[in-house]
Amino acid sequence: MLHKLTISNYALIDNLNIQFEKGMSSITGETGAGKSIILGALSLLLGKRADTTVLKDKNQKSIIEATFLFPDKSLQNIFESLDIDFDKETIIRREITPQGKSRSFINDTPVGLQTLKELGALLIDIHSQHQNLFLKESSFQCQVVDAEANNGEVLDTYRRELQQLNSIKIELNNFLADTQKKKDDLSYYKFRLEELTKANIKEGELTDLEQESNLIEHSEDIKVTLSLADDFFSGENAILPQFKSIIQDFEKKSTISSQLKSIAERLSETYIEIADVAEEISHTNSKFEFDPQQKIAIDERLDLLNNLLHKYSASNEKELLVKKEELQTLVSNLENADFHCDELQKKYFEQEKIVLDYAKKLHENRATAIKKLCPLITNLLQKLGMPSVSFNILLNETKELQSNGFDDVRMVFSANKNISPQWLGEISSGGELSRVMLCLKYILAKNKSVQTIIFDEIDTGVSGEIADQMGNMMLSMSNDMQVLTITHLPQIAVKAQNQYKVFKTETADTTTSNIAILSKEQRIEEIAKMLSGKTISEAALSNAKLLLENN
Image (cartoon, rainbow, N blue to C red; front, side, top):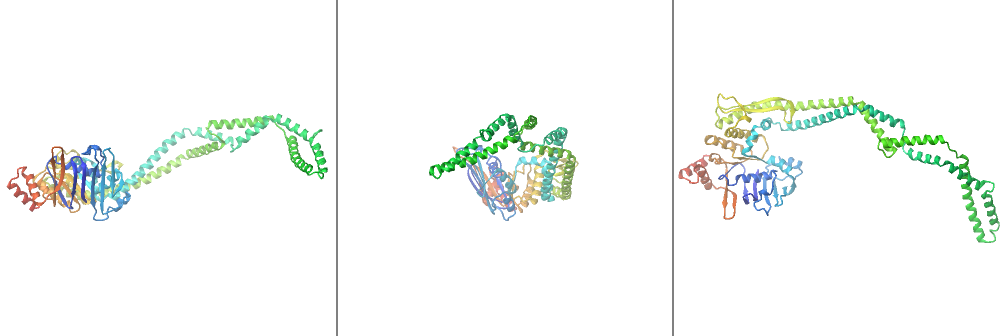
């Protein structure tokens, strides 16, 4: 429940600090005193967007802070799902800076607006006058039926399964569209795959072929060089035998001088290396042959590979091989597309059956709940001054699965005899809509876990005995939740265990709104003023005192 509310620098409010009690509380005050301002501040705590127009002093930030008390741990799982520490005394704070920036905190943990909205929806239900328009929406009417039917878990599961069904449908549609387009080009893909397959590409062969082609291109010059070198080392005037003779000469004289010995050793080492090179040159020269036809074949292969690289925008053979694998997969998938399509359709129909089963369960639960709801709401409306009321809930099946199943929930209503019931969406009487809405909120309050409900002049268009009965309904609701009602009717205000007054004070410089809890004597005076106006008569005071004593 809402325990404390602190507001600073918001609209007409300088500083406001008020504590609320459990049960039913009424909030009264003259029109324009600032009741809607307090509701606006509370709406910010529940995730409504804000801007600097709410700042009373444009140079200071505005702070709205509320303390909520939880008698048990029923909301602990919700806090954990939002990654917020749970505390039986939870503080929600919202700050709006002069620069237009907004910051939100739950138990001093920074949170986003979406988190505020999700948690706020479980803490406070603010019923403002314009919300009567929701009454005309089939989705809201369905929400009331679902609350009575206890459809919460089934509806959540249904929506998850429906989301899965829609995902499969999108996948199937995309597959069919993509496959059809590619099927038209299947012969083209098969041609490209055959082209790459016939090429018999090997990774790294391009470099080898280029080297081989270059070698053949310069083969004549290479042969000349090899022959000259071979003749130089092993021909008629070969240098190696002469080199060998010089080494032997130095070796004979190596005992004479250490220097000559060193030269002999170095010459001997050099000879070994040169002889080895000469032997390799001789061997290469004897085996070296080149075939002009081989050069043609290599160049043709190089042309083929380079053309494929360009055609497939590849930089090497590895990328061509990857392209080939992709084409193999694509062609295989297209050739087996019918099988994959059958699998997806089978998956879709299986999921559709699951969704339909949950939709049928929702429908059955609603049908059972409607049998209880119609006489209950009829009875409540009769207590609210509609003795001849006719009320019914129609449950029609739609052709398509929607977020609430395949049901179209329509509430029909007539307040008078011999008048055919009309869909609530066609009712224009504000007083009738207010009473129907209160009855539906009464039903919702009994079935929802919301902690606090605030009625903002839901009694518009009613008076007398009807107002008295509306007050009794709110008082009954307060047994299960905290009820705050903003009202201009004394019949409703006196039902509350506590009464608050919103008032406005004016100075030469500014106007300020504030709120205060009323004592017993102050309540008598306030109720008397609501009965008779600014001039309070003794009769009005006596009547006010009697009203409070009898409620």
